Length: 238
Image 1 (cartoon, rainbow, N blue to C red):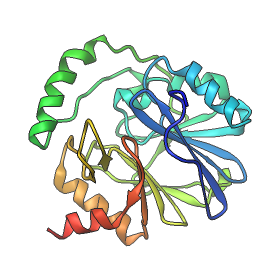
Image 2: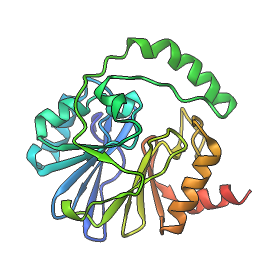
Image 3: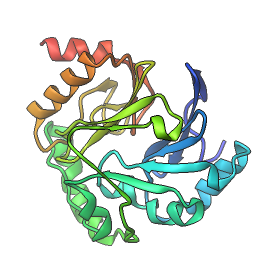
Image 4: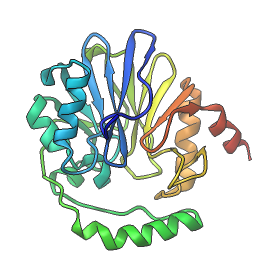
């Protein structure tokens, strides 16, 4: 299995979920009556993306929408290239659209000891990263955005904390794609839990309480494998 494969494809309700690794970032295809993509991965991963859709017997134009969970470079790096290949519209929260359109590269602060060490390392490497700029077609509001028009039974919810414009995609089944609102596994964490980088950890907790209230059941992070939301529920209880 190459870089384009990560995790196990699965059917949930009326959709099929396909994880795809684009660099260190785990992006997802969600296929229902049509297809959407979550996140755009690291820079220079267009060729890996093409191999992934070929493996899935998908045509590029099947992907109608790419939702960016937040604007850090490992989530937007290949968004412009993938948009050009597929013709998909890019949706991104209004607080971070400039990060893609102007190629900004903010680094979130570490909220754990290990997180602060990694942030110091990233600060040295980030100036070398090059992100192709592209326009955001759908500017997501704070109030949320329904995916019914794209044949996907779910919605985009503003879940700030890791970054000011972070969003999550919550399906009617309770499957929730959270970007970096949670993390799972080496080299970030020993197991699943809250992020080790965040602009506001208390806001992370408030966003998770919102997702729990909205029926989240299974968490799909951008770094690591899916896990039960019960782990987050227990963390918030302490």
